[in-house]
Amino acid sequence: MDTQTLRKQHDEIGETSEALINAIITRDRLEVAKSRWRLARVLIAHLAIEDKWLYPALIRDGSPRASTMALNFQREMGGLAAAFNAYMLEWSEDRITNEWEAFQTATWALIEALDLRIRRENDELYPLADGERTLAPSERRIA
Image 1 (cartoon, rainbow, N blue to C red):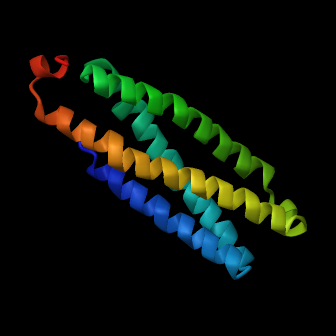
Image 2: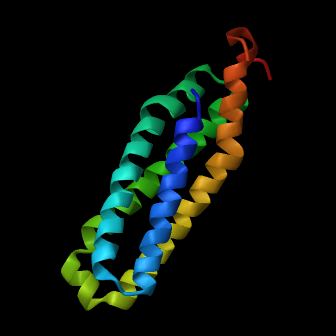
């Protein structure tokens, strides 16, 4: 799989996360709402591609190193996806208004987790996936 699309989605997730943080800093509640839903849209699309295509392909057809790494990332991302879904459900507009400081803390924690995940995928998994793509099928299972 070509990771270029996934990397572009990572860029969009990062830009949207930054917009959300900036909206929180400036207390722009309308932009907070817009950025949260934009982040949800982009992140859900991104996770669907990884879960449906990238991870299964690397687990099934990759080298032992690629298969193991993809399986580990897949397991870890499940927790992050659940955390994001809980965040979106728990933080209604009313709760955000009434518990602004707690909302800020929860958002910072979520964005930090997303940022770490994106950096790890960009630095560790995607280069491995790109390398796997250049190998012949018979070479993928060797070492």
